[in-house]
Length: 194
Image (tube, rainbow, N blue to C red; front, side, top):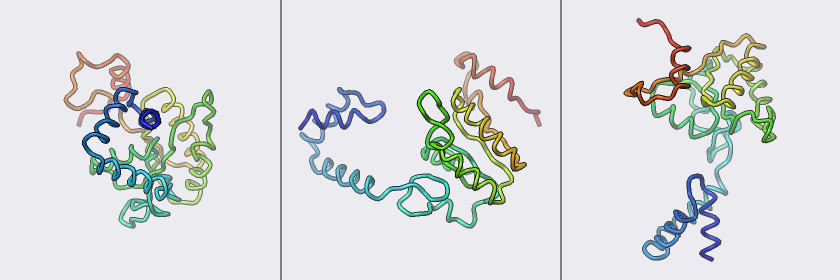
């Protein structure tokens, strides 16, 4: 039973066998009630959480709170790789548009193409809606850049303005500790100083 639990916990990102073992023994020795609450919460989530029919984020409803919010700007659509990216952007309190979640990035080697990312759904959305700006917020990885380029070309078909979130030196970051690729990207993406 403990080995089965270890294998289950080890499936989580960043959790190895030793960390899983620490979780298991903590719950079994010190917090059985917490373990039961965790099991119930996981079961409930696995049974009730699904993808939003519009943006593909995770929600308990058919349409998530952001998509059903009439105050949000329908003309801006931010493309993200994961539902957790939405959470990070929302914490900034700056963006007031809507989202589309890819749940990954283009990776032909791994068998992930346009249809696996819902890009056919995105194209329908772009052709039917009044989106005037597509904001590409994919990660600054090779796969993220390839995915962003693909989506940019898709948006061009519908004459939709495409912007890319800025990447570069983080606020409070020091050049001395920044990698060369980040510095190069920051220099190539520089803007006028106002």
